[in-house]
Length: 154
Ligand SMILES: CC(C)(COP(=O)(O)OP(=O)(O)OC[C@H]1O[C@@H](n2cnc3c(N)ncnc32)[C@H](O)[C@@H]1OP(=O)(O)O)[C@@H](O)C(=O)NCCC(=O)NCCS
Image 1: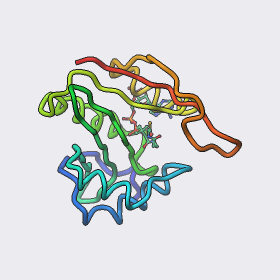
Image 2: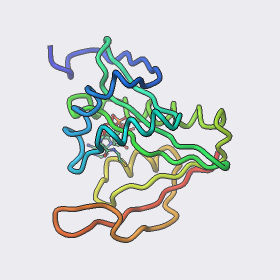
Image 3: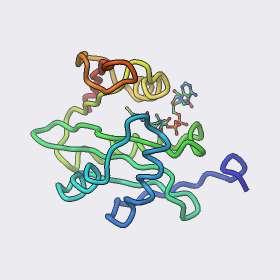
Image 4: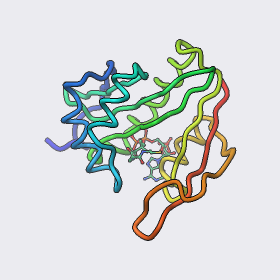
């Protein structure tokens, strides 16, 4: 049965080191410039708020929040391509936002490529607003791409 035919009943749980093999498969399929295993292991080792979303026992997405000094930075939010467009990204972000006060977070920040209209639409619909631009922040096929900085104050 393909992903589109299955009902979506997601569950969330904290990410574990054992999840990283599957996460890397998704990461490499979803991003042109994927994170490395070391990036994910560093987030786990640092005790960041790292979550996975599963459907029917299959890990289909993940999100990572780094918190400190009253600020939270969304470092990654990703849904496996076959599962995108079914509300899972929104749920993953809503979980991060709802849990942020547990880490003392008052304002959330994130960076996003201006070319990533899907993610920008999601973040804006959750109340994030663009507050800045980091020039030449991301690698790109030709040179570098800027990052929009978005903020949500809780
Ligand atoms: C961005 C991402 C996490 C969104 O997750 P998703 O599960 O596909 O999104 P959802 O189904 O929850 O949709 C949430 C919102 O995103 C926007 N969206 C989703 N698919 C879209 C599309 N094809 N075109 C435009 N906007 C879209 C809509 O605003 C949507 O809200 P709506 O359904 O109320 O209209 C997912 O597309 C992804 O993993 N992309 C690759 C990794 C990435 O770019 N992450 C963000 C890095 S900053």
